[in-house]
Image 1: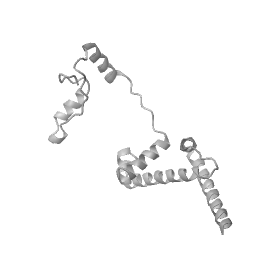
Image 2: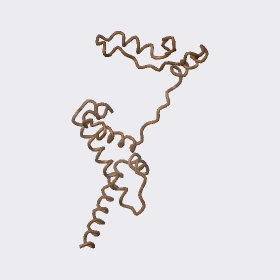
Image 3: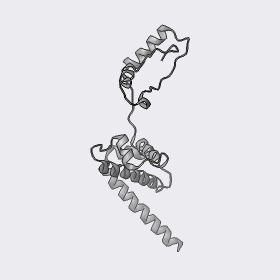
Length: 160
């Protein structure tokens, strides 16, 4: 929005918002441009905002899992709410919540896998493994889990 109140972008959203009955929903969050913005700068800005192709990089599996964890632990959203917001099985609330819970367990497993080798594995290395072949990844996780449990038993036996 210009300093004088002219909307540079979001005209369609502004029209739709005017149609809402609820006054609490009749607000549009905007950035106000400096008063010295020239007409050429405004045209260039409008071109960039409305005509450029959007550039969006998909979340890696690791980033998605960490984001879900943040929503769950720090924002205190329930698994079903997270599933709904991320559109995970939007047609089935229970299935979506179960999938979110599974993804949180996967993150926990990945963190445990990091502890197995003598040198810590970066969490992003495990993302490639999971993303490229889910079935092989699950088998790998199970094998690593067994190995970790065997190591724990061996360590426990040695300490007794």
